[in-house]
Image (cartoon, rainbow, N blue to C red; front, side, top):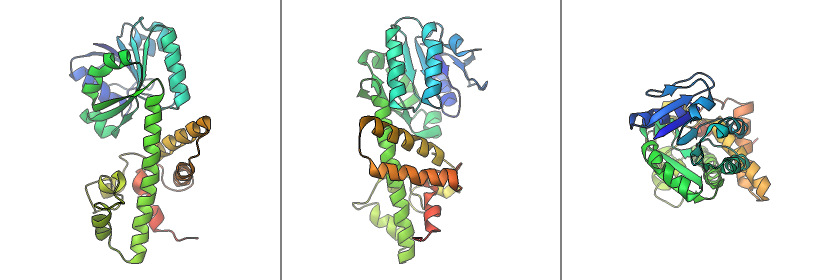
Length: 290
């Protein structure tokens, strides 16, 4: 398949490289001049999109996505698919999809879960919004880049699934860290805490698979000085997107909003930027109620 790939950063580069390794003809562009193994470099986003059957974007935010879409949609051939794998606001995803469909293109919003490791290993999960025909066209590419692609419904629903999932993740990580900090002060060992909770009603992905306490449970960023697998500032971004969507949909999300404010303070007022989002544990364990 002829593929244009725009955005060759930490996530985009290994995704594009895996597609090229699988035998697809990938032409890539990144505004910072970044490249990826096996990918032909283009001088512009428009050049990367020209003649492509699928154009994949992996970009930082909705404003940049809208600008790139304005550039590449006129260069794409009728029937091609614009596949956005960024995590952006639902409104931007739906606006870009509408623009693409008006130009005779298929459109998918397909944010990912799995981080840089999943991108490199081809084990990402894609949450996909858009029409069924475009999803079928892109499915062979999802199979190369990831282990699972879930069609969540019409345009914007992929982003909706991603931000709802990460609102849960952000909130459960905070309360998991709170529980470990409380256990410390009550004299309960972290290992005993893990052994009980991981097999009881309090179990969660934050506890069982990504435990924020070093030396407990499977290896996680906590065992590597909280170097980010998923940075706190990225969690803050996703929680802000959830809050924006909640406001637009008139949904009451008090716990999600509280989690957003805690991560805002951690990232913007304290030392959380550049640390894993599970580094909320050392933040909490050093604090009292005051």
